[in-house]
Amino acid sequence: MALRKEDLDTDDEQKDNARKRSRITIDVRPELRRRIKMAALEEDLSIGEYLGRILEQNVPTEVNTPQQRRPMTREAIEGLRRVREQIMQDRNGRLFEDSAEMIRQMREERSQELEQL
Image 1: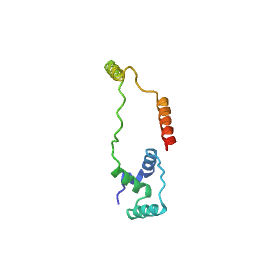
Image 2: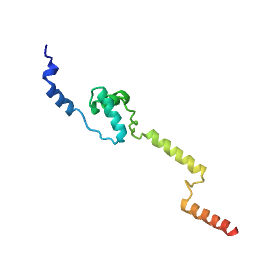
Image 3: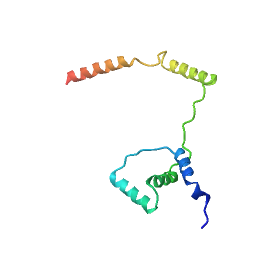
Image 4: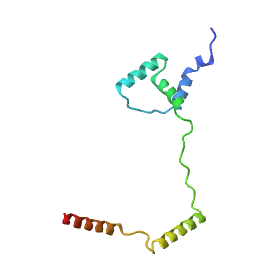
């Protein structure tokens, strides 16, 4: 029987693999844990190896990351100023109404409605 390099270097290889891994802890129902354990045993794998294979098969290698923010340009700032000016023109110089005053008026109207009942 011939010896392979893998047979001789298993300790070093296992140490390297352990260094390259990180731990994830998840909570599962006892019944699910039992099923995972049985499935791993059927394939002669540890639970970690079994779940690792499942995750490798199902988790995409590239995750869509949100686009990085771009710096504000002069053109963008000018565009915002034009939009602001248009809003000011459309609203006769007032951007927004005072929300506290709006709430007071609505309460007063509701109180008057309730008094008439």
